[in-house]
Length: 143
Image (cartoon, rainbow, N blue to C red):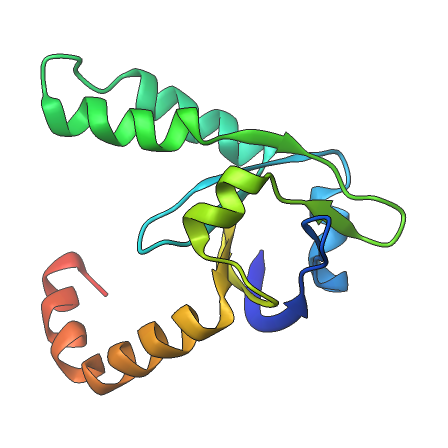
């Protein structure tokens, strides 16, 4: 299970260290792809396979389904941890997420999100100010 919030620097080669507590779950490889809100999502290979199967079942006749599948699948890249626990984020994904120098890595149970630090701080501040309203809407989902 991935939980927590961590900040790491990204170097000029696009390498970013993943939190030590996440590394064992990703040691056999992982997949990074475009996420929502200009974030990136990192999946274990097992979780990526589940997601890819769901995307493959979306109806081709619906424009939203095609667009979401394209966003997720065309952006996906296999990545591996090096001996220092770093992964190389491809340039097109760094550009999509707006990565500059610091990256915030957050655990979301079965996946990891990566955010440009400034973008995360803005998003997080907005969500915190709206937390009561968001919580009200989630009661319909059983949360």
